[in-house]
Length: 592
Image (cartoon, rainbow, N blue to C red; front, side, top):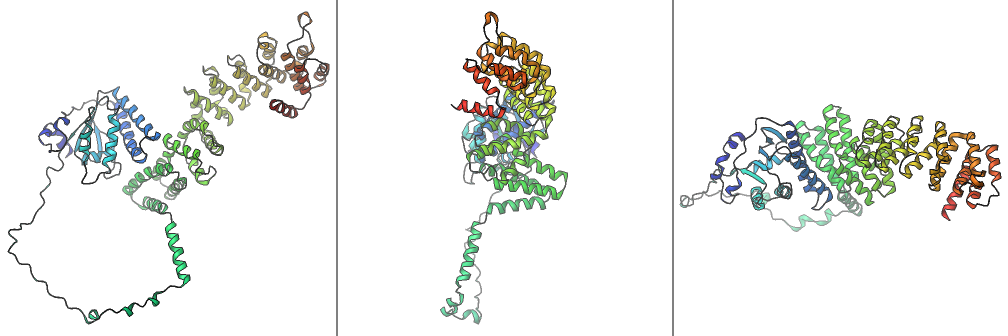
């Protein structure tokens, strides 16, 4: 039937009903190519999938909502991708599908709520053509028209009229008069029936019981009075019924239909749940969303079939989509949901590995500590279960993704990612190199020593300090000789005290007692013309001797106790303290 209608498109101009779109809105059909570009077909299929999701979002969110804006932006990008391969996009409309080059690029169950193909077909549209430039403004107007058409009443304008009013320049369509063959409504002939007499109906006789008059005494009110206990019980039942969560009962009924229905019914229920889950999240109803997730998992476990499990994973997997996840995080930030609630734990526990990248980008902006901790725990769980994905993210060209992935891998001590993290030290972005160094230090394995040694020569001060502190924490003895060369160099004397101290402490930890002689020379020795070393170098040497300990180091510190340089004298006193007491003293000094 559809092919017969489409074959007659050149004659549509003579069949257009008065009051519908003007004839110039019906262009000549574009001939279909015999060769099919598989990549172009894939892009068109993705476009119409995103097109349906955008219309659904337009129904859920108000105009100006950032989530709706993101949907529209993604749709425009997909359409622009098609323009790189084709001069236009022409599709034919059928009852349950949209075809391009006779291939279905969008297919939906007939009668479904989101069946855009049926909505267009029902109002007579049989061919649709999008031209370059439609993505600017007309695409958004077309979406608003389709959204509005779903809410129109019978006495209001139809879809064709709305599209005609928009006067699209880059969206063309062909249509048929769907009401042209409608049979006439029969009307009575009043002139012929004017002399016809209506038959008389027989009179009805009432039984003696019904002829008895009704008296007031028959309704004695005292017989129907309730005592106080009965009244209180009725009020309690009425209040309980009033407070009963009707929404939850509807959800139970829908899920029961999914469990007990046939395959056709399950498909319908899936469409409903696919719309319901994002909506309850947008309302902040985490309890309802968690209830749906729990019940779906229970149904999948009870039915124990692969097909049902795939359907449940598909619905629950939408929680991991960036837009839905962003809505969840935003609700957490508003403070209207308890971050420690079981409902939130259920939703976060249902997230899939696809949510890792989105969580990495969103968590740094979360200011609420409890919410941030919950999201970090979820991110760590997903990352630990997918080490291969984490290694790929560490190699990402996006510096933010690479840095965050490295931090997570280091925090979780994912040994399989050491090589990928070490490669970050060659990147141009300083923040990525710093994240790589910090992640390697957290690994605490012998494999990270050489990469950290290379980072000591980094152009960024923070990277060099982090590498030196990491070597000190690891007590990496093979680095002693190279570190000795650094502390002897004049280049280190030009740097600030924090960096000098990090290098001296790394040398002390790596060389141990072998470093006492050189450090004693820096602290108490003399240079050319009997001059002492700079105060910062002497102070760092004193701190390093304190880390090494032992009689020889203690003797050198005792010699410097009468030094007149306040910086050196302070370092000597702190060098003799235990590390815990020294850290506490530094905090006090920093506070004053």
